[in-house]
Image (cartoon, rainbow, N blue to C red; front, side):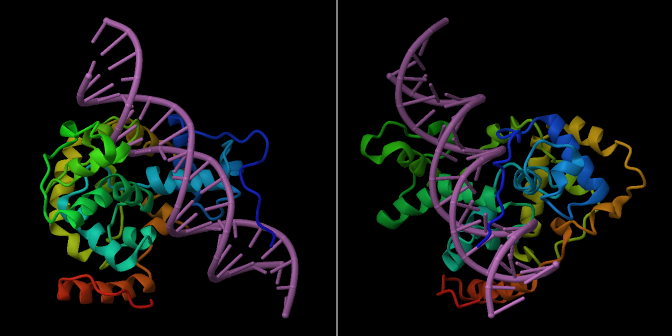
Length: 263
DNA sequence: AAGTGCCCCAACCGCGGGAAG
DNA sequence: ACTTCCCGCGGTTGGGGCACT
């Protein structure tokens, strides 16, 4: 099969994105959408491959991204959905508005998986909570095992300090950008999540200048709807998501993990 | 105060699926 | 029907930064 070569083109930049690149990417997508990721970097004048641009947008720059702490509800939801869906992070992310598959994947691997592991061995063994109480150097557990213990806390605040240190976050964007409601997606994480996000927003008032700067850039006739034509980020939940809604309801009604039916 | 170890997250890599020609 | 191209996904990794010694 002819697989499209990616990123091996000479001269393409890799590694962390600079604020300038972010601005260029955001501005370009706001103006033109992202009809073709592959062509986008060239059109936008970025020395990145389309894949990298897409990832950056989806995981970081998209205005509807929610950053900061995962609420207890969200964490529980992830755990439940993982029970149902396995490592289908994108499907899980579809049930958590504002969260990306990458973020969920990270949270799972760094927190939730370990929370479950000890819980399966020692039922409900509580551990001191909080990142700062992580029990390091417990020997056998290895590099991540200590974090597992810490993450086993009933409510583990997740990476607040770190997220706060991010160079670019959107916090205020989630509400400031016209965004269709995510349909019925995430219906069961609505109210509480909303409130937790509100508090998170207060916590994460970082670099708003980036967004205000970016959004205030002249957009050549770009109005609020300018992003929508190409922007799947604002698309309504898919039919697959509806299917999952069904199974999710089944699951939630039952209150226990069930075997995942073929979707 | 300096050194070391560990955690977390952003980003990369490679593959599979689907659409278009 | 076949080939090519692009998108999206899941797994993995490297570096920054924090906590501890």
